[in-house]
Image 1 (cartoon, rainbow, N blue to C red):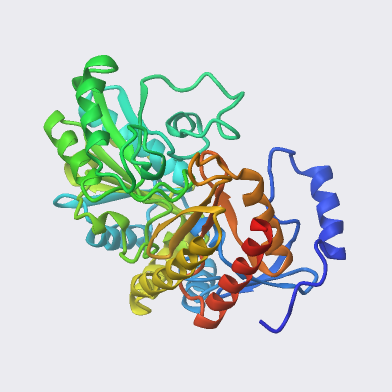
Image 2 (cartoon, helix red, strand yellow):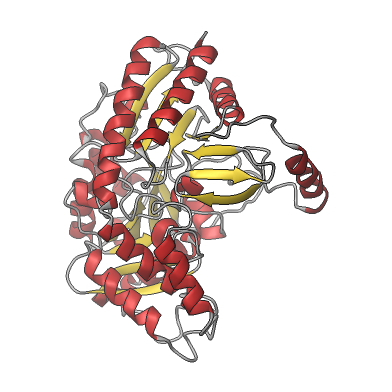
Length: 442
């Protein structure tokens, strides 16, 4: 990039930050004290004219890049015709077209149907409602290290206590948690990278000690746990979970909110394991940043609730649906899942080379362009290096690179760069990251 960061925060950002602190609720945090003016592709420009390479992509919302031209054009065209009507009263074509498109793309079992909402949390809420209505059972199983949202139900499904759950109880009832396949910190003390079998065998005890399977409506899991630290499960884990659910009549819900739409090298992450879930939740990169989410699943299950049982005033807004249709076309035309795989190969190679040089990096993991490094103070004890992760994130944005944290211990640095990033921008961003890691590692 030609433009480099000169001051953090710049004078305009500093003024806006003061206003934000005065008028915006304190609970809304920010990682970098900058205010974005415009963005294109994988580059963000702030109100002070500073430019940044974007390695967080709106937290996986901008797989197709900032402001892709076909999507912007589709938004403008739709906005001139219809901004809103509420599909539950008067319908419009783009909602139906998008449902058809996703039913053909999503790897669910058999004939598929879809419904739309506004956020990933809303999609998960609706998936739980649909599963409960279909099975006539109350229980929901989720996993440690999971993140599914900030509403009551999705907060209850989420694992990380602080900041997401602490002080907001009581949680929703009939939610049961089991250990996830966190191979680097195996719950069952298996050797890394782990076989996955103990994570599956636990259900023999769980269904006796915690909840009977006939009382469980659904199991929900992210194929790669995002906020939990980009945890990629071993090969047999997801197929094993699907088998358990099929045997016990439990609806298998896969949360692809962060992993979907090309991020991992496939259109949807579950395709890496050949898994076909009963229900799938999607959001984030579905519409290049426009608020939209959905539940796609087996028609038999999706049709269980009666008319009026699911829906919402803004769900499947016509402008968002138009943006989604254009985004999906763009992802396919530009072959962005293949591009994600190439980005991931480059990033993982560079991170592994850093890992060999810097003991601070305990683990490097990812799938496609969903890449992370876990930092530790000592590789033997694996004591989380949370402060060092924070320093790396701060020093990166001071040098023109935006990355964000993750992990239940706050010691993971994750990367979700737009899949339209150029090779030059990718190389420059990784060079900045290594420069910072070298300094922090001492």
